[in-house]
Image (cartoon, rainbow, N blue to C red; front, side):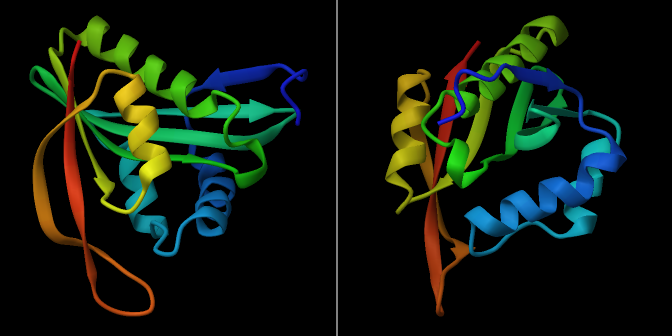
Length: 152
């Protein structure tokens, strides 16, 4: 565990894209593409990087429009999980919502991703719907997504 080494948080830059892509490819079966991640720099998008000793160990990307934010992606390096990094990234998203006057945060999570769901429930998200066959599943098929929401 590296929890004794300080974490640093900052906005994502284009220089971070390769590290974020590599991180996500290591922790998910269907990672974002370069184009998907580069959308984080378009208007209304918000992003945050977690770094430890100069290494990107987590990131979060959201879309902030009107009075709500949609969390588009949260990823934490496998060797850094269960150390509170995901929670800290999401709390920074909540702060961005408060500053922008947003009232609610939404996200989708794989129905099978129980550890992420546990984190989201701990952060006061609740299930508000299901997107059927939303995510690709290995080796084939599709998986439902739970739609979760949290009031700011």
